Image (tube, rainbow, N blue to C red; front, side):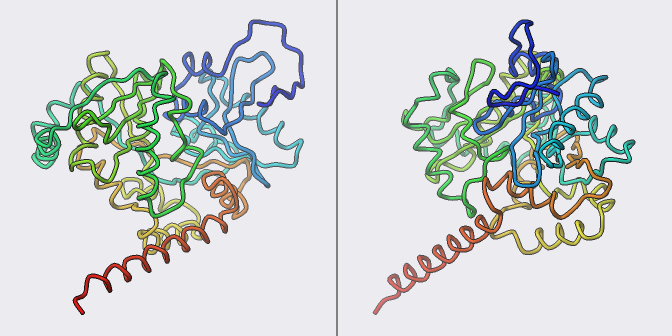
Length: 370
């Protein structure tokens, strides 16, 4: 029994109105915890509102954003209640971007299956100055952006919601992506859900925004998830690094001890864990890494984060409430990120790719002297 986001009440609760944000600030340990407040994510509460799960509904499954937000000793009970609620609608459950704490519980359960999907880099921001001193390529990028006149400002998170310049910048950024925009935990319009809990940094050049960074709290781990880094095509090289450098400095000054930039899908840092996945999933992942580079820069994303010398990498998992991870559950995961049918996403991606190739050929033809 529980309360389903959207106002469907299965029990009557007469206590104080505890919100999802309240629970996140009290129990948020998973790096994705605060992301459940982003647009498009529903909330399921336990009957006495002591725990919350953020999720999206797909045809065959409820796909949860990370682990349940609750006390550590309540994870098993909360997960069981959430899964019973989903089962009433004949839906399975998949927890995506879950970390080791939920994976440890699921491995001990015969009713669950666990697959590794990648890893996320982790820093202690107090160690960031030492990293900058030892990483010459990082220092070079920081210097490039600074020498081009890029400066970083802290913006009020709430006032950022309606800033036209930032939304225009985001639109330009999305236009450079090889795939249509993904939602859920990837390219969600975070600015529309900005709050005083989030940190928003803006990169300015000639007083015009050329990039921004949004960091969201991971309260129990005394840290933050750098949830989104956006830069326009005209931004000088090093703009993203300069935003990260400023964020690390601010978080260190606040006494934060944990910073991550989130999941790198199919990361080589998680290869040992990925090798333990079922054979059919390993084959799909190998195919995606070999043939999906033109649509999603797996290697580039990992290289970008690795060059900043994280202290360590955490393996990230998808967990299903079924004894063996099924193709149907994997399909539901893909549908959660695409926002609709994965086939539709693939068709739009291929169409966009063909369009770019045609435009390149036309530009090349026009550039050839007669």
